[in-house]
Length: 331
Image 1 (cartoon, helix red, strand yellow):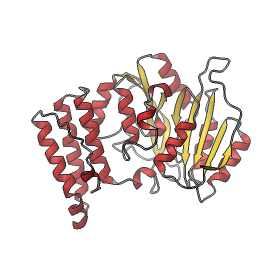
Image 2 (image 1 turned 90 degrees about the vertical axis):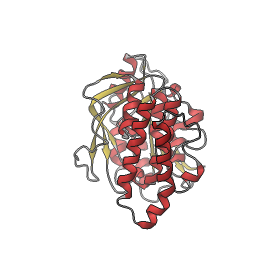
Image 3 (image 1 turned 45 degrees about the vertical axis):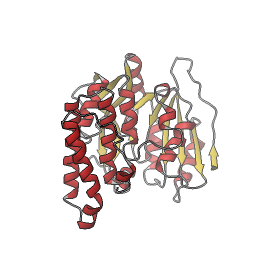
Image 4 (image 1 turned 30 degrees about the vertical axis):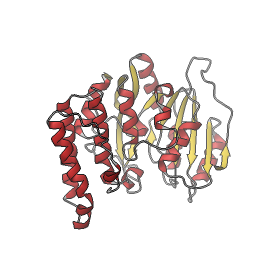
């Protein structure tokens, strides 16, 4: 499975000062332009008990050389290189399985963390037993590291640091149709709280919304600890993984999350109808920029969304899967 392994001495599960081990998870592929910045931000963390787990998905550029350099200088870095490319989701799953920490802190290899990111998020979770997920606002940057204006997706979730009821956060995210909880780089959680059999066993349940799927599952069982001060930098560039995903995946996967939250009583049917309407609007906006062939290909999806909206508005529980194969095949 691996053609290269760089191990180090295991970090203590709890150090002499009582700090629980945090695994900083960095899956990567062909990120030589940004990887050094990501690794530098991971090694600069002020939190005293971390391990850095890097899994290279058989990069063809100088990524592994950069990893080897950092591994030679930092004894808390463990690195693995796949013998072939297994795809983004599998690489993330591998990184998850290799980590040993009590907490997980993701860091996508084109992003970066502020030096106090881990310390602040751990402190937030440990200060409130009901909190199950910690996140913060983030700063969007371009390929050269220049700060960009906030987009609809990077506007802070709330106006102040604090603890927010999980169900309310889920409702806000689904109705807005925007993951303001944050991309993987923004969050930290206790490994014991994640359903690893459901999300990290063999394949991802979802492809486009795999991170939001996990955040929603966690917030069904606890609260969100949110830091209004930015603690990470989210890089926006043409080669980022989220841009390579099919746009059409967002709709059926979004419908599935709405359906599950509705049937489980996390959101009301009124909120479910509003969330489906948001997806309809998003899809309509996307269709404006499609050519005739693309519109024809997405027609089954459009019809399906309208049928779901009609059912939800009537108050009927839609129990059939909202990610059916015939719909997924068209996107």
